[in-house]
Each structure stands twice: as structure tokens, then as C-alpha cells.
Length: 183
Image: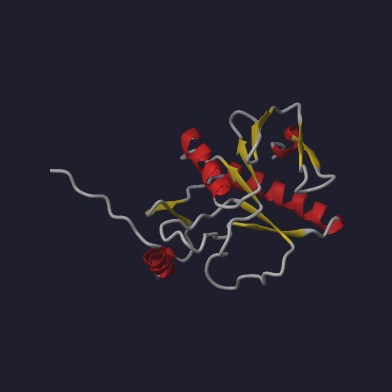
């Protein structure tokens, strides 16, 4: 007997995450499936390092805002509410969302691979972000000590001895890939 997989909507997902037992946990809604984010110390240290570096850059170049674990969704998709490790949003007329998900993808989504994620899942996330409005995606792979960068037209693999550039999105931003892993 084959059982059909339950597919949750955004409304059901938000009710699930609002339960008292789930309030301090991190979840994403991926194609109608509720997925718990499992992170370890290395992941948190890399995310913190990138947030500090991007925050310092934005202090000198106030072109947007950067945040950690911000929910994003597109208005016409009732089966996805994504939670990039780091979101960069260009300054725009949209006010800061105080409750619920941002109604758009960030201009830059950064994901740091956790021990529980597969490479396929990471690449699927990058494709999803780009297909739904992100301008760029950075995938950080701690165990391989490399970063993959994506835009709609490009894909680059940067090794530890190379430099990550902010391109048109983050003018004058550059960072040694090796520095990302100095935790």
C-alpha cells in the first residue's frame, strides 16, 4: 500500500511553527514539506563571520540590509517559505517585515551547508532562489572549503586561495574564501 505524502500550505506551516514547542526551532517549507534546519557549531561560526563581514561592508556602503534566518516567500507560491542562512536585501521602498515572511526572495541568498544537507539539496536551493527573484546565491561548503556563486547567467566555483566578489550587487566587496573558514 502506497501512502500519499502530506503537502502543507504556507498557512498550515505558519500554524505549525507558531506552536509553543516549535517557537525556538528553525523550519523551512520546501515544496510543501516541513524541514527542520539542523545546524552545528561550525555552521553558526561561519554564518556569524559572514554577517560581521557583510555588516561592516554595509556600514561603509549603506546600500541595503543583511540578516540571519529571515523567512522569505513569493506571493503566488503556497508551498514554499524559505529560510536562507543569510539574506541581503537592497534598500527599497518596502518596509521591514515585523511578522511573517518577507513577500519576496532576497537579492542575495547565502546558504552554508550543514552536516545533514546533501549537495543536491544545496543546488536545488540555489536554483529555487534564482527562479523566484534572487539576483545571486552563494553556497558555502565548509568540508570542501569552497564557495559556489550563482547568478542567472553564471556559476563559479571559488577555492580557498581565490577571492569572492560582490559583483554588481555589492560593489567594491571582496573577500578571501580562506577568510570565511577561519573559525
